Amino acid sequence: MDPRRTLVVANETIGGEALHEAVRRSASDPGSEVLVIAPALNSRIRHWTSDEDDARARAELRLDQCMARLRDAGVPALGYIADADPMQAIADALPLFAADEILIATHEEGRSNWLERDLVGRACQAFGLPVLHVVVQESREPATLVLNAA
Image (cartoon, helix red, strand yellow):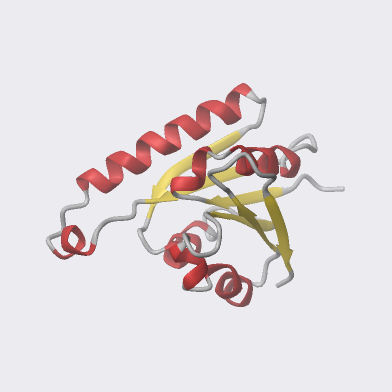
């Protein structure tokens, strides 16, 4: 079996234990590769004024912490700050990283902007890859992992 190549898309949920557990499972085969992209989300006003420095700095801090945790767990991963639009961020990453699957981490329903905009469903349709959806909850409840077929 060929090693798996997993594209991870996460923002505020990037530090969640549920996400890290899902990434460790995806990368458990020798030779597996992981690319973590962290969209630099910004407020509308800051976006309109082209003030992206704060959004990029916050995303970079979260990404650095994620990469350190993955490295400590023995998961070989690369990461970078991506476009604020998660669909565009995925589209930009795929030509550079031929993923076998996309792992999208969100907050729970009612709190997730990405779920409200059907990011998971749109990614399934647009990219033709299996999409794993991890719900990172703030409480200590078990995480939810859903596989959406392309």
